[in-house]
Length: 233
Ligand code: SF4
Ligand code: SF4
Ligand code: FES
Image 1 (cartoon, protein in one colour):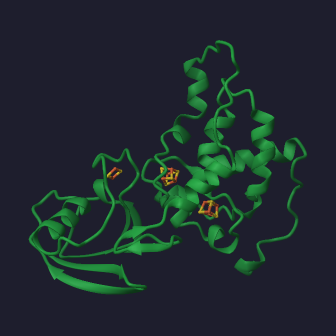
Image 2: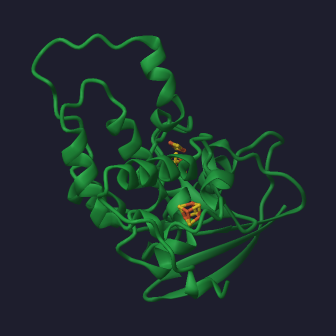
């Protein structure tokens, strides 16, 4: 199989072409390990669990952001690149700190009530999909609004936030909502890229819409009247 690998070294990208034998059923992560073990031990990429749980192995495969560990290698050719919207560090490794910085900045966490709270299965149903988020950052890498508005929290932050907002053990709902005002929820263009590429089916755009509704209802933000000028609507 022909492998086209876009790598970042010493301030520039370059593309390397390799011919590799790939056993049937291999994942993109298996392929990367094969290259590292048999061709170039200096190749850098991230991975831990190999089971779609840790969220570290995001890369672009044939132009689409994917988890390397749950994407099967198919066909005669493959192109593997670092994900978009993130500062490249080395080869396929990008800087994921901005996402964690935004989560810390927004204090996206449960404020315990200090008393026993019963949580029923019906309560968990509301946040089932958002709870599946593994913070892989794939949705952020595919989000055009994050490029245009660096204050926008991004789909991963709002997905995480929704789970916290709807958690019956959280006594800080209003405070959490007020903090979310700074993350410009209305910068979302509802393009659905995040829903399309999320490898866990978390549907981030749906939670963004619901959070915008919560903020509007309480008067923390006003209904937006202008369009997204940068898209030329
Ligand atoms: S919402 Fe999906 S794509 Fe976004 S960080 Fe979570 S798991 Fe990854
Ligand atoms: S729907 Fe909103 S959050 Fe999702 S990728 Fe598009 S602009 Fe970004
Ligand atoms: S290695 Fe953990 S999600 Fe891919």
